[in-house]
Length: 348
Length: 215
Image (cartoon, rainbow over all chains, first blue to last red):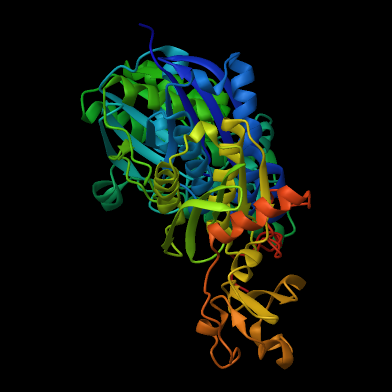
């Protein structure tokens, strides 16, 4: 008998994703984003995102099925992001997922958004090597995880204690007069800049900070240092070398992320590192991770960018793993948990 | 016609299954903060109790508000998705009408909780909605409106401002379903299945970066 077809629904932030996965094969994928509606606010507005999810959910269900050449009747199980994320946004996806599961009389699985990001990689590179260290970097999250079993055993090693890495990109972009979302724009600018021009601080990388927060991150101090540097230049009437600032800032972020990820691999005797999340699209982070992993003898896995940003495919992929282990489905009483811990891979 | 009716715009999570005008089964739970958790179990129970197979449902009627946004969307997302999966039409009904349909009075007000010290309100006379739905601070409503018999949670929240409470607090899916069934039978128009938000998202456009330097 062939493996079950799992429908995945993602709505934790500003992307409405729906996809169909069988095993580790992506069959169909649809994504709507409300990012353009958030530009004038300089960040994601939860109510704007929630309204957009409601508009997009049925069209994305249709498009994902059309993309797969299947109908909803072919779906064997439904998986949905139950958290973490924006509560009102999550509720749209969870409500829709319940409706599909109930109408088709299929089991429903509530899965963890962060674990789903890690699992996205199976769609590009096959089953995860386990154990693996996973680094998740996006606009909402910066987490370092130890994955012993993607369906049942994920441990948080560290996380950001203030801003997410992607949030720092957005804030630095603002001070440089670059539009939201900052990541892609800064990355383009940085290619013309010198990443060693300015030495910006690396948070939680020395002394007592490192002892107490070995695998945690902090980007708030870095962001403020960049803003201060730029505003001091402006106040002194000097030109701001925007490309150098962008490149030097991204260098500081990539340095801390890769250094701590590799330290986590070494500390736990693990030779595989998986990186996911939207910030993975940053070219300096990719290049530095490749170089440092090669030097350290660590196998690096990074899925294509489309699978790094929020999407339904990763949710379906994790759902497929959870189904394959025979884990219990959630009841129709499934709720959302905006701060769901990463140790809860699936919720009942 | 076998109709599924539901509403999540008030404190009640309410579901009913009707065959034309006859209510076969209904389930209602009161909990303004747990619409996501409660709705699907209520739906499942009501349909099971009705004796109708889920695939025999022919239409869905859903309250489109106005109501607190997050809870409201739970009902609408559920109705839109069910209609899509089951391949049946979905129709919208003003949720205040699903409160009003339970009131027996010639001239009255419905005022429900809009949070942020405001109410969603509408006036009904001669069996029809004559004003609203609108959103307002209760104190901004003219006294002659506020003194009408008032259904909904408005009087419970603002007893000094709505002195004539009517003992109908929330929407009822059974009442909503009857309104929809009657409209469908007589060919009256129902609403599109889109939330009646009545308020724009509460967010200010970005004003640019703040200075971190000492003045």
